[in-house]
Image (cartoon, rainbow, N blue to C red):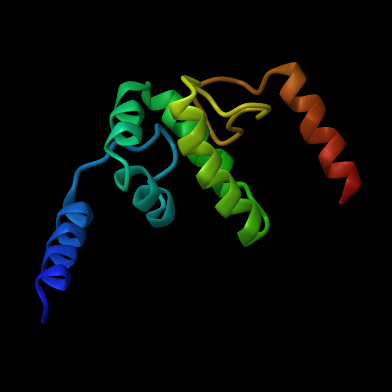
Length: 117
């Protein structure tokens, strides 16, 4: 085993055990976690936002119906954090929270989506 392989293995082991904060409702998905810990600046920005904001990003990623959409959202999460955004752009918000009622605007979107199905 070469030195580069050993270093890569050690780095991967360190990243796999690195603590990372999740959301208030959603657990941290492995693919999003991997993207966040891959860049130290993105990781620091992630840790700097509130648990509610982290929850919004996680819900946004988890809500993707297709794998390509999910990959795009994970990439976009990292980009938006680097751009200084603290919530996902153009997202109605997590509907899984039980600590507050669904707002009228979110309910309207949910009703509209359910009629499409």
